[in-house]
Length: 150
Image: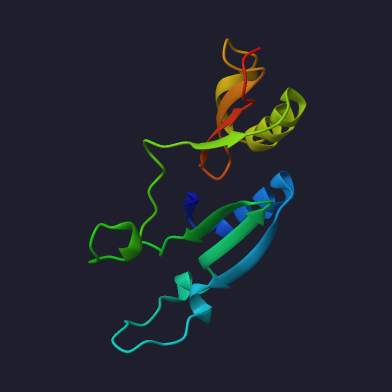
């Protein structure tokens, strides 16, 4: 069994996934837009503003994966649900990353923190040689941790 974070974005999923691929040393193994979906019976017409948004992306970094998509743009008269349109910031969760060294933790943390918002600076703690919490510029909250006590 493997747990795979599935991230949502508000039109910048392609930019975010390209950034994560570079930062984490991975590659995007699949990516498609809503505009590339085949037509399906009974599906309402796709708004022009949605066609360039990512329907699905899959990033592979070693044995780990992150998947993502953009939400549909908010459309008047639709139900208040992410799949019906309209982005909501992540709440009540963090994507946790375990790294092998404090130097690697610092590199990853600093990359995520660039133009983001630091909740807890990356530093040694009683449980770790390095730990920090940051919300990146795309709105995704991350915890970067070096396993093992200092």
